[in-house]
Length: 419
Image 1 (cartoon, rainbow, N blue to C red):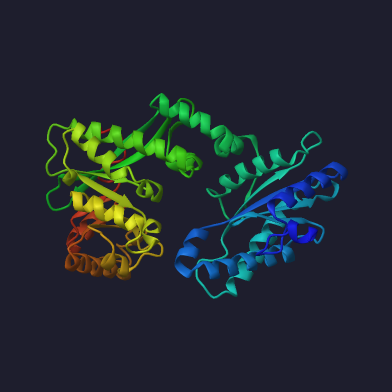
Image 2: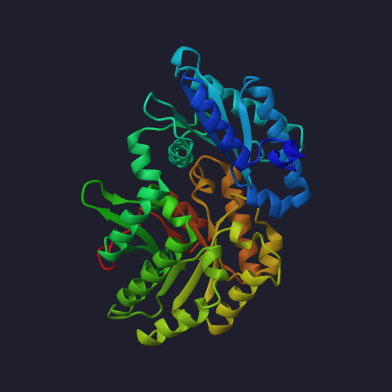
């Protein structure tokens, strides 16, 4: 019974409480240096949404077995919860170079195990590592450091992972990010930037997409990837969303002539699950003298992976009923398919830049864009092509019949009116 109480019921690894308890005991009695690895499966929620929770459980069990095989037999292994795993491994003679090999073994083992499951896009994992020192043997602080490195690894090469350094701690630590983020928000150093969406046929600006930028006194203009940890924290993400949407509407309302311009607002699943979103937007539009027809709600593919008639679907339908339009972003790069265009409330499709990067030399890419234009026209959906960086690409898109484009060739993100 004691052993069962220490074990995760699904994977048979140590559960969170038992893992930390045993780590404290080992670090208190074993004077060698140790590496604490923290592992997080990429896109695990999407796996559950697409293939179902029973398959997700099977995937977690496969990962657990892969870690047992990949790491030394005397390692402490635990499942901390959800799709997060941890391991404490002794480093012979304090050899930190061993860490790179350990992480490579984890990557390879998980990829090999996931390949046997017969589904695409499995086996990708992020790894963060913290190494003990003579003065640092505290498990909670090591986990904190490994967590910071884990977030850093999500921006780096997933085949390498990341080992904690003070710089990664500063940028990716939840504990340090929160006060810095809230202070920047209060001082209005986190601002809306606007990138134009242009019509190739008329040459005029058809709309603007609202993007978030952090104006840091030391590091300059930071894109969302630099503070993704804050965006993944529901409380901070909600504060950011309220502030950015309010300021964006204020700037947009100040334009001398709006018609036929629209403003594209990026919202996440957390925003759409918030019951007050529609009424908050309604009051904000009224305050700034704007109509719902001026608004486009942009969502990613993963946001639309929920059930039809579910809460996110209902919110989008409600926004659309008020007069807003809905845009599906990065189409073609993930799990969204034609069923989403048929079943979900979608008015615009944004084609990811990867489909046009080689359009001048790739007949297949050209044929794909042409076919998608015919499909969206038949569906009554506007197609916006992202990543247009030069006149040659724009000219080819114009010949294919594409009208709406977005990219640095037609304007980089900046304060409204700066383009």
